[in-house]
Image (tube, rainbow, N blue to C red; front, top):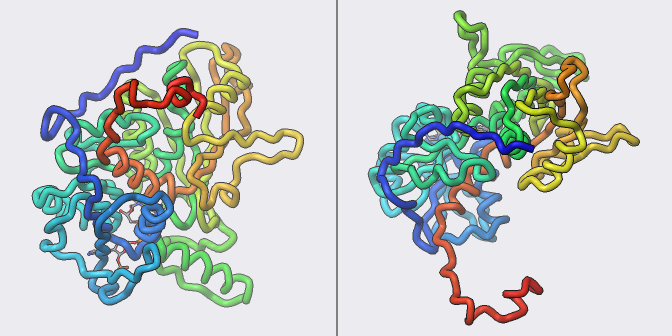
Length: 377
Ligand SMILES: NC(=O)c1ccc[n+]([C@@H]2O[C@H](COP(=O)([O-])OP(=O)(O)OC[C@H]3O[C@@H](n4cnc5c(N)ncnc54)[C@H](OP(=O)(O)O)[C@@H]3O)[C@@H](O)[C@H]2O)c1
């Protein structure tokens, strides 16, 4: 099959030259540590044995005085302030775009590398927008801030990139089934409370989301652009995917829907490639793809589900089938599910931080035991 030539967005290096790496055991800060994503960041650092000399946890004044456990220690949560970043090497931001716009440049000026989960800097041409499985090389151009993409975008990109790099996707239709967790800890609580109220026959007044959530679904709760008709989430999906793939010509359309699932987003992906492609080829590409697990059990009608994706780092992909509406054989459809608190947010941010860690020095060949050189170990 022809290897497609993919145009890439130029990333303007902020500092120029090669990647500025972290010290071997950096001081790490999490901004928004008490939130749905922040709590997962703490867990990811622990589970992945991220080497650090200190972990500082920041949130709003509401949380000051709370503690969070990390490798057996109770770490105090402090109120975020402009003085919070002295001595911090890497700051994982997961509060809001407003907090990031104000505090991320301060953290970067203090010498920290910021990995920002909010939408504040994602489309800034000088800021790399990174999914390590797709475009880790763009991290080298960072000028102190690296953006973590939208959660739908990360999950879709992990599943689509291995196909796109072999046989360029020229048109993509993406439809989401997005969980409560995508709207934060308070939305998860709203789904629990409103479901209890519904089952008890009690009235429930929504506090976080605009519509009844229990046993209902609705168009994503971001506002609609009157000119385009797309909501904010759909617009992010379209713009950010093009930037990460470095392919401004990618034709993409999205419909984003909030469903009453507690955790993990699911999505339908319908893609048209430049060259003919068949489902077996897609399956074999995805079998070898990093961060992807193919779940395509036709006999048992078992395909990606949010329940199975929850708590998993991998994106589950299945229902891989030919798109019957395209007689040219260039189109396939698939279904994916991914834990957007993990790969869609916290895990992706920690993986970016891992990319900034010093690389182990290469040993001269003579110093490497023969069995290792032969690939026995
Ligand atoms: N949820 C997802 O799946 C997801 C995925 C990708 C990106 N994101 C982005 O990640 C960010 C956090 O999302 P989330 O879902 O974790 O939200 P969340 O559960 O509502 O948590 C928000 C966090 O931000 C803190 N915070 C709020 N105002 C603050 C302030 N003025 N100063 C310092 N900290 C403040 C909160 O602290 P308190 O507890 O003290 O209020 C809390 O720790 C958002 O930008 C969101 O768009 C979320």
